[in-house]
Image (cartoon, rainbow, N blue to C red):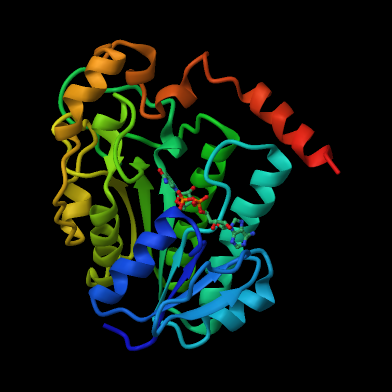
Length: 282
Ligand SMILES: NC(=O)c1ccc[n+]([C@@H]2O[C@H](COP(=O)([O-])OP(=O)(O)OC[C@H]3O[C@@H](n4cnc5c(N)ncnc54)[C@H](O)[C@@H]3O)[C@@H](O)[C@H]2O)c1
């Protein structure tokens, strides 16, 4: 393990909070970067308040780091100007800053929505190789682009770049779909630790889900990195099925990787209008 801290971008967010707690327990020092200040800086933690799209600030932040874990961004669908700037330009800056600072490993928070229109297989588990880019939103396009940028930096500069196609990273599953797609807080930490420590991963893309009884995404590639999931969403199943029913794999929300985002019911235009409306408020 390299001695420098891990630079975590988007550290003030949900997953960032889990990593800021969990990575030090696994021996990592953490340098936490976000555009907003942390509510509370932990003992031993470095804090950097910066915008991930500010390349000069990112190069400074990456200096002396052993790895970059890039989480910063808009974590749902939004307008194209916002997504393309924060998520795509931001990912370029994270990778380019790592390269300029001599940091050899980058872990990227990709998403299932990079492949969201991919249909569920009739039987068996879906591998990453069987789910090429098929984004379901502008957000998904930004994650497909994230993976493409990671591939470029691995091939062109020989960096190790591990892309985590995260399912649903929340404290606990809150929908029936998430009984398949949940990534628990503990497994998020375990997966990122595996991505940071796997020997010579080169460029890798792996699903990020817990060992859920109902999952249909294959974990062979993630396990090959050293990921050893400890959680399963099934204990939440009875209550969620009682509340929402159990629609089955043919239901539109369950028929494709991206769930609701890949259905006609997902109203991207309404979200966009809301975002524009918000932006226009004084
Ligand atoms: N939580 C999930 O279920 C899930 C699933 C798939 C992928 N992901 C990805 O994981 C990452 C983290 O997700 P999260 O759930 O913690 O989201 P979050 O919204 O809680 O955290 C994102 C953080 O990024 C920061 N940020 C936004 N713009 C920034 C900028 N320009 N510069 C610096 N920081 C900026 C925000 O302030 C926030 O603290 C995101 O990239 C998201 O797309 C999350």
